[in-house]
Each structure stands twice: as structure tokens, then as C-alpha cells.
Amino acid sequence: MTALAQNSLDNNYVPSGRYRKYPVAAYTVIFRGAGVMLNASGYLIPASDTSGGISRGVSRDEVDNNPGSAGDLECEVDIGGCEVVVNFGTQSALTQANVGDKVFWKDDQTVELAGTSANDIFAGTIERIGDAYGANLTSKCLIRCATPGEVAAN
Image (cartoon, rainbow, N blue to C red; front, top):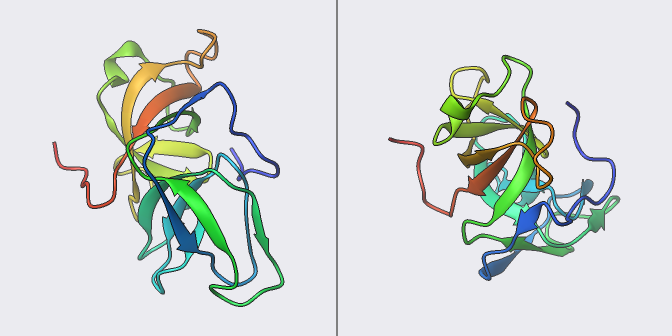
């Protein structure tokens, strides 16, 4: 999968009701519905398998800080353990046995199982296989996003 190129927050998203604004990194575009994280400098960026990143949840805004300096704009993030349907990486097809597995960001709309990415930035836990329509049973999953401070330990 590739990172988002447009907003994607739709009926495949269950909000938590807990939101927080974070300053956005310089030269960064964040789409509504994207998985997001803080970079090593503490600024919000689209989720990815990047060293030093700290997962924060799902963007509720579209923010274009390009061009722009770090912190010029803020983005509202659902930080309360929201549920969102994401793509599953290509390492294997999903099965019902994956429910409860911890997953890690590959990009801002794709997750993978532990040990298949270089940095294992914790995204959340698989709650259901497939999308909101019961389709895409091997390539999409509903995850409960990690809350700030939550770790991937079982």
C-alpha cells in the first residue's frame, strides 16, 4: 500500500470522543483520516515506519503545512483509542486468528504485524477482519488505535 493522497475519514471510523491538537511538522501534509505520529522533534507527521516516531491516533483534520515552518499549523487528533479500518501489509493474508494481534504502522493507512517493519511503531490492536461492509477479508482490518503511552506488550 501507499500513503494517503486524499482525505479518508468515513464510515470506517468510530470516534473515541477524546481529541487533542498537535503542532504539525514543517513541509508536511496530513490528510483527514490518516494515522499520525510525533516525529523525534515532537511535531505531528503522517504515520510511517520511521525511527523515533510515537503514534498518536487518527487525524480529524486535513492540514497542509507545505510550505510552512514547524508548528505554524495544528491538527486535531483522535487520541482516545478510536477504531478505524486500515489496509493490512502484504506479508500475509489476514485470518480470524489475527484478531487481538498488535499491529504497527507501515504508512498512514497501512499496518503490519510485529517484526515485519524496521521500527515497529505501535498502531493498535486488530479488533475485526475486513471493512465496515464485511468485505476485503484478507487485506483490511479494523484496529483500535493505541492511546498515548500505550505499549505493544501482551
